[in-house]
Image (cartoon, rainbow, N blue to C red; front, side, top):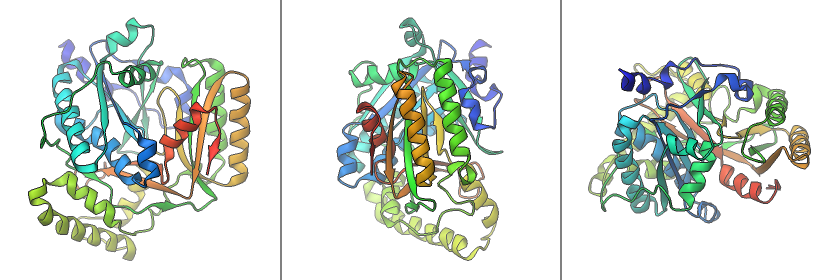
Length: 387
Protein backbone atom coordinates (compact mmCIF):
# COMPACT_ATOMS: atom_id res chain seq x y z
CA UNK A 1 0.00 0.00 0.00
CA UNK A 2 2.81 2.41 0.89
CA UNK A 3 4.52 1.73 -2.45
CA UNK A 4 1.29 2.53 -4.30
CA UNK A 5 0.87 5.75 -2.33
CA UNK A 6 4.47 6.76 -3.11
CA UNK A 7 3.98 6.05 -6.80
CA UNK A 8 0.90 8.31 -6.82
CA UNK A 9 2.67 11.04 -4.85
CA UNK A 10 3.09 13.53 -7.70
CA UNK A 11 -0.34 13.20 -9.25
CA UNK A 12 -1.90 13.77 -5.82
CA UNK A 13 -0.17 17.15 -5.36
CA UNK A 14 -2.56 20.11 -5.42
CA UNK A 15 -1.62 22.28 -8.44
CA UNK A 16 -1.28 26.05 -8.43
CA UNK A 17 -2.06 28.09 -11.55
CA UNK A 18 -0.48 31.51 -10.92
CA UNK A 19 3.20 31.27 -11.81
CA UNK A 20 4.30 33.61 -9.01
CA UNK A 21 3.46 30.65 -6.78
CA UNK A 22 6.89 29.19 -7.60
CA UNK A 23 8.29 31.57 -4.96
CA UNK A 24 5.85 30.27 -2.31
CA UNK A 25 7.39 27.36 -0.38
CA UNK A 26 3.96 26.27 0.87
CA UNK A 27 3.26 24.99 -2.66
CA UNK A 28 6.11 22.44 -2.39
CA UNK A 29 6.04 18.97 -0.83
CA UNK A 30 9.04 16.73 0.05
CA UNK A 31 9.69 13.89 -2.38
CA UNK A 32 9.40 10.50 -0.63
CA UNK A 33 12.76 9.12 0.55
CA UNK A 34 12.33 6.04 -1.63
CA UNK A 35 12.36 8.07 -4.84
CA UNK A 36 15.35 8.64 -7.16
CA UNK A 37 16.45 11.61 -9.23
CA UNK A 38 17.34 11.01 -12.87
CA UNK A 39 19.64 13.74 -14.18
CA UNK A 40 21.22 14.10 -17.61
CA UNK A 41 22.95 16.68 -19.76
CA UNK A 42 25.01 17.03 -22.91
CA UNK A 43 28.78 17.13 -22.47
CA UNK A 44 30.31 20.23 -24.16
CA UNK A 45 26.88 21.50 -25.16
CA UNK A 46 28.20 25.04 -25.70
CA UNK A 47 30.64 23.73 -28.31
CA UNK A 48 27.83 21.86 -30.07
CA UNK A 49 25.71 25.01 -29.99
CA UNK A 50 28.59 27.04 -31.44
CA UNK A 51 28.60 24.57 -34.33
CA UNK A 52 24.91 25.23 -34.98
CA UNK A 53 23.53 22.04 -33.45
CA UNK A 54 20.78 23.83 -31.49
CA UNK A 55 17.99 21.47 -32.51
CA UNK A 56 20.06 18.37 -31.86
CA UNK A 57 21.02 19.57 -28.37
CA UNK A 58 17.38 20.31 -27.51
CA UNK A 59 16.24 17.01 -29.00
CA UNK A 60 18.79 15.18 -26.87
CA UNK A 61 17.53 16.89 -23.72
CA UNK A 62 13.91 16.14 -24.54
CA UNK A 63 14.76 12.53 -25.46
CA UNK A 64 15.60 11.89 -21.80
CA UNK A 65 12.07 12.87 -20.78
CA UNK A 66 10.48 10.89 -23.61
CA UNK A 67 12.57 7.79 -22.87
CA UNK A 68 11.64 7.90 -19.18
CA UNK A 69 7.95 8.52 -19.82
CA UNK A 70 7.68 5.66 -22.29
CA UNK A 71 10.09 3.30 -20.54
CA UNK A 72 8.36 3.71 -17.18
CA UNK A 73 4.89 3.92 -18.77
CA UNK A 74 4.32 7.01 -16.66
CA UNK A 75 2.85 9.99 -18.49
CA UNK A 76 2.41 11.96 -15.26
CA UNK A 77 6.10 12.17 -14.34
CA UNK A 78 7.64 15.11 -12.43
CA UNK A 79 10.37 16.44 -14.72
CA UNK A 80 12.03 19.63 -15.91
CA UNK A 81 13.53 20.34 -19.34
CA UNK A 82 16.81 22.23 -19.19
CA UNK A 83 17.62 22.83 -22.86
CA UNK A 84 20.80 20.74 -23.01
CA UNK A 85 19.54 18.20 -20.49
CA UNK A 86 16.68 17.19 -18.23
CA UNK A 87 15.83 15.96 -14.76
CA UNK A 88 13.03 13.73 -13.52
CA UNK A 89 12.00 12.20 -10.21
CA UNK A 90 11.02 8.52 -10.32
CA UNK A 91 9.58 6.16 -7.69
CA UNK A 92 12.06 3.67 -6.28
CA UNK A 93 9.99 0.80 -7.64
CA UNK A 94 10.77 2.04 -11.15
CA UNK A 95 14.48 2.79 -10.68
CA UNK A 96 15.57 -0.29 -12.67
CA UNK A 97 13.43 0.74 -15.63
CA UNK A 98 14.73 4.29 -15.33
CA UNK A 99 18.30 2.97 -15.53
CA UNK A 100 17.46 1.08 -18.72
CA UNK A 101 15.78 4.11 -20.27
CA UNK A 102 18.71 6.41 -19.48
CA UNK A 103 21.25 3.88 -20.75
CA UNK A 104 19.33 3.50 -24.03
CA UNK A 105 19.03 7.30 -24.38
CA UNK A 106 22.80 7.66 -24.00
CA UNK A 107 23.40 5.22 -26.84
CA UNK A 108 20.76 6.78 -29.09
CA UNK A 109 22.08 10.33 -28.57
CA UNK A 110 25.63 9.19 -29.39
CA UNK A 111 24.72 7.16 -32.47
CA UNK A 112 22.01 9.36 -33.99
CA UNK A 113 22.89 12.90 -32.88
CA UNK A 114 26.65 12.61 -32.49
CA UNK A 115 26.54 14.03 -28.96
CA UNK A 116 27.61 12.67 -25.58
CA UNK A 117 24.83 12.37 -23.03
CA UNK A 118 25.92 12.20 -19.40
CA UNK A 119 23.39 10.59 -17.02
CA UNK A 120 23.06 9.59 -13.39
CA UNK A 121 20.43 8.18 -11.03
CA UNK A 122 20.68 9.59 -7.52
CA UNK A 123 18.70 8.36 -4.47
CA UNK A 124 16.71 11.12 -2.77
CA UNK A 125 17.82 9.58 0.56
CA UNK A 126 21.46 10.34 -0.37
CA UNK A 127 20.56 13.93 -1.21
CA UNK A 128 19.02 14.42 2.22
CA UNK A 129 21.93 12.67 3.93
CA UNK A 130 24.16 15.43 2.51
CA UNK A 131 21.98 18.15 4.05
CA UNK A 132 19.93 19.07 0.98
CA UNK A 133 16.27 18.52 0.23
CA UNK A 134 14.09 17.64 -2.74
CA UNK A 135 10.71 19.35 -2.78
CA UNK A 136 8.34 19.43 -5.69
CA UNK A 137 5.34 21.54 -6.67
CA UNK A 138 2.87 21.16 -9.51
CA UNK A 139 2.27 24.19 -11.73
CA UNK A 140 -0.88 24.01 -13.83
CA UNK A 141 0.14 25.47 -17.19
CA UNK A 142 -3.26 24.71 -18.74
CA UNK A 143 -6.35 22.65 -18.01
CA UNK A 144 -4.64 19.59 -19.51
CA UNK A 145 -0.91 19.96 -18.74
CA UNK A 146 1.04 20.50 -15.50
CA UNK A 147 4.79 20.91 -15.01
CA UNK A 148 6.89 20.07 -11.97
CA UNK A 149 8.83 22.75 -10.08
CA UNK A 150 11.72 21.72 -7.78
CA UNK A 151 13.30 23.40 -4.76
CA UNK A 152 15.49 22.49 -1.80
CA UNK A 153 18.95 22.45 -3.37
CA UNK A 154 18.94 18.72 -4.02
CA UNK A 155 18.68 18.98 -7.79
CA UNK A 156 21.75 21.22 -7.96
CA UNK A 157 23.72 18.84 -5.73
CA UNK A 158 22.70 15.84 -7.85
CA UNK A 159 23.83 17.61 -11.01
CA UNK A 160 27.19 18.38 -9.44
CA UNK A 161 27.58 14.74 -8.42
CA UNK A 162 26.75 13.60 -11.95
CA UNK A 163 29.36 15.92 -13.45
CA UNK A 164 31.91 14.52 -11.00
CA UNK A 165 31.23 11.04 -12.37
CA UNK A 166 29.28 9.68 -9.41
CA UNK A 167 26.01 7.70 -9.70
CA UNK A 168 26.92 7.27 -13.37
CA UNK A 169 24.68 5.40 -15.80
CA UNK A 170 26.64 3.55 -18.47
CA UNK A 171 25.50 3.48 -22.08
CA UNK A 172 23.50 0.52 -23.35
CA UNK A 173 25.06 -1.77 -25.98
CA UNK A 174 25.44 -0.33 -29.51
CA UNK A 175 22.20 -0.30 -31.45
CA UNK A 176 19.99 -0.12 -28.37
CA UNK A 177 17.12 2.32 -28.87
CA UNK A 178 14.91 3.95 -26.25
CA UNK A 179 11.18 4.25 -26.86
CA UNK A 180 10.84 7.85 -28.07
CA UNK A 181 7.25 7.62 -29.24
CA UNK A 182 5.73 11.09 -29.45
CA UNK A 183 9.00 13.04 -29.52
CA UNK A 184 8.95 15.74 -32.19
CA UNK A 185 10.87 18.87 -33.28
CA UNK A 186 9.12 19.85 -36.51
CA UNK A 187 8.67 23.56 -35.80
CA UNK A 188 10.93 26.20 -37.25
CA UNK A 189 12.39 28.82 -34.88
CA UNK A 190 9.84 31.23 -33.38
CA UNK A 191 11.01 34.78 -34.11
CA UNK A 192 10.74 37.51 -31.46
CA UNK A 193 7.80 39.91 -31.84
CA UNK A 194 8.63 42.33 -29.02
CA UNK A 195 12.38 42.91 -29.21
CA UNK A 196 14.39 39.88 -28.13
CA UNK A 197 14.09 36.29 -26.98
CA UNK A 198 15.96 36.15 -23.68
CA UNK A 199 16.86 33.04 -21.70
CA UNK A 200 17.29 33.82 -18.01
CA UNK A 201 18.63 31.76 -15.12
CA UNK A 202 18.63 33.10 -11.54
CA UNK A 203 19.79 30.89 -8.67
CA UNK A 204 20.37 31.62 -4.96
CA UNK A 205 23.99 32.42 -4.14
CA UNK A 206 24.27 29.56 -1.67
CA UNK A 207 21.86 27.25 -3.51
CA UNK A 208 19.49 27.56 -0.57
CA UNK A 209 16.27 29.47 -1.05
CA UNK A 210 15.90 32.40 1.35
CA UNK A 211 13.10 34.93 1.90
CA UNK A 212 15.27 37.50 0.09
CA UNK A 213 15.70 35.22 -2.91
CA UNK A 214 11.99 34.40 -2.94
CA UNK A 215 11.25 38.15 -2.94
CA UNK A 216 13.67 38.62 -5.84
CA UNK A 217 11.90 35.89 -7.84
CA UNK A 218 8.57 37.55 -7.09
CA UNK A 219 9.91 40.84 -8.45
CA UNK A 220 11.27 39.22 -11.63
CA UNK A 221 8.01 37.41 -12.30
CA UNK A 222 6.05 40.63 -11.69
CA UNK A 223 8.26 42.49 -14.19
CA UNK A 224 7.72 39.84 -16.87
CA UNK A 225 3.97 39.83 -16.21
CA UNK A 226 3.99 43.43 -17.44
CA UNK A 227 4.90 42.15 -20.91
CA UNK A 228 2.14 40.92 -23.23
CA UNK A 229 1.07 37.44 -22.00
CA UNK A 230 3.89 37.45 -19.47
CA UNK A 231 6.54 37.39 -22.19
CA UNK A 232 5.27 34.13 -23.69
CA UNK A 233 7.42 33.51 -26.79
CA UNK A 234 4.77 31.41 -28.55
CA UNK A 235 2.06 33.60 -30.12
CA UNK A 236 -1.46 33.04 -28.80
CA UNK A 237 -2.52 31.92 -32.26
CA UNK A 238 0.42 29.53 -32.44
CA UNK A 239 3.81 29.92 -34.16
CA UNK A 240 4.16 30.77 -37.81
CA UNK A 241 3.52 27.45 -39.57
CA UNK A 242 6.87 26.92 -41.27
CA UNK A 243 8.11 23.36 -41.48
CA UNK A 244 11.65 22.54 -40.32
CA UNK A 245 12.97 19.80 -42.60
CA UNK A 246 15.98 19.46 -40.31
CA UNK A 247 13.53 18.80 -37.50
CA UNK A 248 11.74 16.17 -39.58
CA UNK A 249 15.07 14.46 -40.23
CA UNK A 250 15.97 14.40 -36.53
CA UNK A 251 12.49 13.13 -35.67
CA UNK A 252 12.83 10.31 -38.19
CA UNK A 253 15.95 9.21 -36.29
CA UNK A 254 13.86 9.05 -33.13
CA UNK A 255 11.06 7.13 -34.82
CA UNK A 256 12.89 4.36 -36.66
CA UNK A 257 16.18 2.52 -36.90
CA UNK A 258 18.45 3.19 -39.87
CA UNK A 259 17.06 0.36 -41.95
CA UNK A 260 13.54 1.79 -41.79
CA UNK A 261 14.37 5.49 -41.88
CA UNK A 262 13.88 5.97 -45.61
CA UNK A 263 10.34 4.68 -45.19
CA UNK A 264 9.41 6.68 -42.11
CA UNK A 265 10.87 10.02 -43.30
CA UNK A 266 8.27 10.57 -46.09
CA UNK A 267 5.48 9.62 -43.67
CA UNK A 268 6.61 12.16 -41.06
CA UNK A 269 7.13 14.81 -43.74
CA UNK A 270 3.65 14.23 -45.20
CA UNK A 271 2.03 14.20 -41.76
CA UNK A 272 3.83 17.44 -40.97
CA UNK A 273 2.78 19.09 -44.23
CA UNK A 274 -0.87 18.23 -43.54
CA UNK A 275 -0.58 19.59 -40.01
CA UNK A 276 1.07 22.81 -41.16
CA UNK A 277 -1.47 23.23 -43.95
CA UNK A 278 -4.20 23.09 -41.32
CA UNK A 279 -2.39 25.76 -39.32
CA UNK A 280 -1.72 27.91 -42.37
CA UNK A 281 -5.29 27.71 -43.73
CA UNK A 282 -7.04 27.58 -40.37
CA UNK A 283 -8.97 24.41 -41.18
CA UNK A 284 -9.77 21.19 -39.33
CA UNK A 285 -8.68 17.78 -40.58
CA UNK A 286 -10.86 14.92 -39.37
CA UNK A 287 -10.80 15.02 -35.55
CA UNK A 288 -8.00 17.60 -35.59
CA UNK A 289 -9.43 20.89 -34.29
CA UNK A 290 -7.26 23.73 -35.54
CA UNK A 291 -8.42 26.43 -33.10
CA UNK A 292 -8.22 24.18 -30.05
CA UNK A 293 -4.80 22.88 -31.05
CA UNK A 294 -3.30 26.35 -31.50
CA UNK A 295 -4.63 27.44 -28.11
CA UNK A 296 -3.25 24.30 -26.46
CA UNK A 297 0.10 24.66 -28.19
CA UNK A 298 0.72 28.03 -26.55
CA UNK A 299 -0.79 27.19 -23.17
CA UNK A 300 1.04 23.87 -22.83
CA UNK A 301 4.50 25.42 -23.32
CA UNK A 302 7.05 25.40 -20.47
CA UNK A 303 8.62 28.78 -21.20
CA UNK A 304 9.15 29.42 -17.48
CA UNK A 305 9.98 27.03 -14.65
CA UNK A 306 11.68 26.68 -11.28
CA UNK A 307 14.45 24.13 -10.68
CA UNK A 308 16.41 25.27 -7.59
CA UNK A 309 16.26 28.60 -9.36
CA UNK A 310 14.21 30.52 -11.88
CA UNK A 311 14.53 29.66 -15.58
CA UNK A 312 12.60 31.39 -18.32
CA UNK A 313 12.84 31.98 -22.05
CA UNK A 314 10.71 35.01 -22.82
CA UNK A 315 9.91 37.43 -25.63
CA UNK A 316 10.45 40.88 -24.18
CA UNK A 317 11.03 44.48 -25.20
CA UNK A 318 14.47 45.92 -24.58
CA UNK A 319 13.35 48.52 -22.03
CA UNK A 320 11.80 45.84 -19.82
CA UNK A 321 14.87 43.68 -20.30
CA UNK A 322 16.98 46.52 -18.93
CA UNK A 323 14.75 46.67 -15.83
CA UNK A 324 15.11 42.91 -15.36
CA UNK A 325 18.88 43.11 -15.59
CA UNK A 326 18.99 45.98 -13.12
CA UNK A 327 16.91 44.05 -10.57
CA UNK A 328 19.05 40.94 -10.98
CA UNK A 329 22.25 42.98 -10.68
CA UNK A 330 21.01 44.49 -7.40
CA UNK A 331 20.28 40.98 -6.12
CA UNK A 332 23.70 39.75 -7.16
CA UNK A 333 25.46 42.73 -5.56
CA UNK A 334 23.61 42.00 -2.32
CA UNK A 335 24.80 38.39 -2.38
CA UNK A 336 21.27 37.07 -2.88
CA UNK A 337 21.62 35.49 -6.32
CA UNK A 338 23.77 34.61 -9.28
CA UNK A 339 22.27 35.09 -12.71
CA UNK A 340 22.95 34.64 -16.39
CA UNK A 341 21.14 35.87 -19.49
CA UNK A 342 21.43 35.09 -23.17
CA UNK A 343 19.76 37.20 -25.83
CA UNK A 344 18.82 35.86 -29.25
CA UNK A 345 16.39 36.49 -32.09
CA UNK A 346 14.24 33.36 -31.81
CA UNK A 347 13.06 30.49 -29.65
CA UNK A 348 13.00 26.75 -30.35
CA UNK A 349 10.18 24.36 -29.54
CA UNK A 350 10.56 20.60 -29.00
CA UNK A 351 7.42 18.57 -28.35
CA UNK A 352 6.09 15.37 -26.81
CA UNK A 353 2.60 14.26 -27.82
CA UNK A 354 0.98 10.93 -27.00
CA UNK A 355 -0.93 11.27 -30.30
CA UNK A 356 -1.41 14.05 -32.86
CA UNK A 357 -5.06 14.36 -31.77
CA UNK A 358 -4.51 14.49 -28.00
CA UNK A 359 -4.72 17.81 -26.17
CA UNK A 360 -2.06 17.01 -23.54
CA UNK A 361 0.87 17.59 -25.89
CA UNK A 362 3.84 19.23 -24.15
CA UNK A 363 6.07 21.88 -25.68
CA UNK A 364 9.58 22.58 -24.34
CA UNK A 365 10.88 26.07 -25.04
CA UNK A 366 14.52 27.16 -25.27
CA UNK A 367 16.38 30.01 -26.91
CA UNK A 368 17.13 29.52 -30.58
CA UNK A 369 20.84 30.32 -30.33
CA UNK A 370 22.04 28.65 -27.17
CA UNK A 371 19.30 29.55 -24.71
CA UNK A 372 19.69 28.02 -21.27
CA UNK A 373 23.09 26.47 -22.00
CA UNK A 374 24.56 29.88 -22.83
CA UNK A 375 22.74 31.56 -19.93
CA UNK A 376 24.29 28.95 -17.63
CA UNK A 377 27.73 29.75 -19.03
CA UNK A 378 27.10 33.44 -18.35
CA UNK A 379 25.87 32.53 -14.87
CA UNK A 380 29.30 31.17 -14.07
CA UNK A 381 30.81 34.45 -15.29
CA UNK A 382 28.72 36.44 -12.84
CA UNK A 383 25.66 37.31 -14.90
CA UNK A 384 26.73 38.95 -18.16
CA UNK A 385 24.53 38.92 -21.23
CA UNK A 386 25.58 37.71 -24.67
CA UNK A 387 23.79 38.62 -27.86
